[in-house]
Length: 120
Image 1 (cartoon, rainbow, N blue to C red):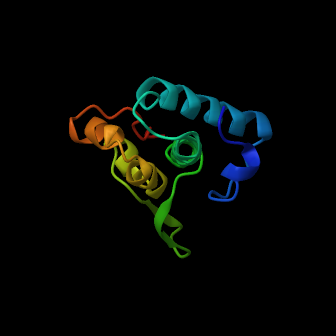
Image 2 (tube, rainbow, N blue to C red):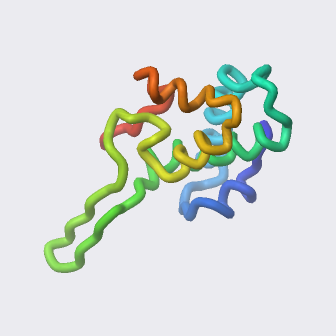
Image 3 (cartoon, rainbow, N blue to C red):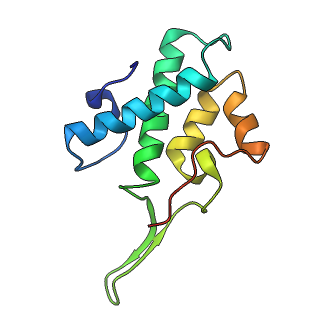
């Protein structure tokens, strides 16, 4: 794995336990290995993309990003749209931006959303 729990927590606030966070890092690592290795990206860039993909995975499942919250009536509106993959969170959007090979953008644009936000 290229990133760590400590580095991940610098970009996403989470109350998840270490073993849960590491599961997301492992998932991001698997994705990066299968989609971006061999695309001409350096090790440090792959590590950074992996960190943002792991944050995206957390934000699209366990720590959804709210766009709007209200106290009276307890309403929360979550950001992003379901089924648009990496584009559905700011973390995924950053991963796409960092990928100079444009592979992640092609996955999203081609209708093959590698990681979809999961509706809970």
